[in-house]
Image 1 (cartoon, rainbow, N blue to C red):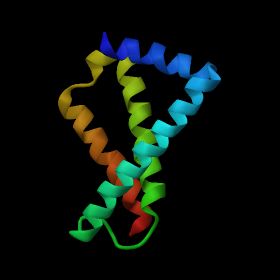
Image 2 (cartoon, one colour):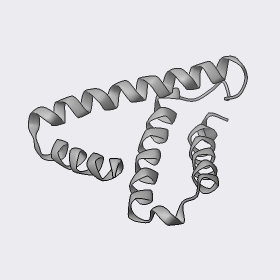
Image 3 (cartoon, rainbow, N blue to C red):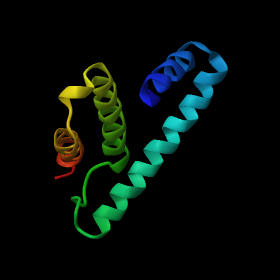
Length: 99
């Protein structure tokens, strides 16, 4: 039920100019947050030292958003194990260009 409310909320943000600005700001904040996580992972050797963490962070955000929407459409098909595997794949794919 919470996800259904979020979809309505996102839909409203897609058509209201003031809410679009707020959403754009939130998107920038999330990209910066994920980029920070990737920089931390880079410092301890979990992520390669070359490539753009910002680009990788955008990939993580956009792919995770798509995964979330897909789960909404067919929640019974996505067990915790499947979702965790997909998240691992998203992160692996995001950092692949950094290798």
